[in-house]
Image (cartoon, rainbow, N blue to C red):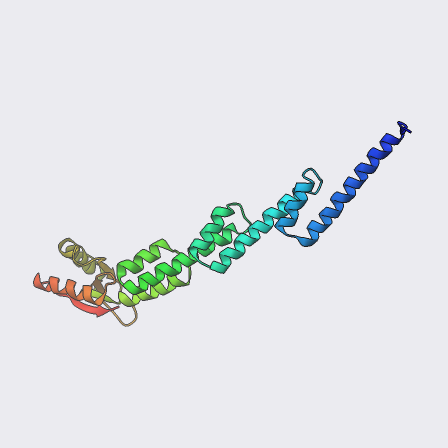
Length: 221
């Protein structure tokens, strides 16, 4: 006996309901497992389901989280760079960039410390404007440049400035950063002096000035 026409809609409705129940059950299962594989299985079975986009979003988040966990475990500049390459729009991109900068700064600071020259320390501070190592670099540079070449001490500012200008013309290339320092405290004289220098450089500069019959002395800052 053939089914009547009225039965066909009922069969179709039953099939749709069964499919919906199956999709909902599969979604609950995927949601419970909360793994990339589970969501991918759900998408394979129900690519057009109402939860399909949510499944894709969760896969993306899980992959991002895993990539970030791998980067943190490695904790190297290369590891964080790999995260940025794999997840350029990931949730941890800014943190990854900050970590790359911090790790590179630490490595560069170690190199500057080992070199321990004015040029190395100044180069480090030009590259990095902040961070704990920058303050250490400033302190190390101050210690390294703890000397000046003093070329004269005069009673008034006008005389000191004239002496400065004359010395600048004669020895500006040999004594960097010539300046007039105003008196302070119990000091009553205006001092013509070089900029901060290392002890070695200050002694060398003063020796050259003395050969040219100019008065100078090496003093601590």
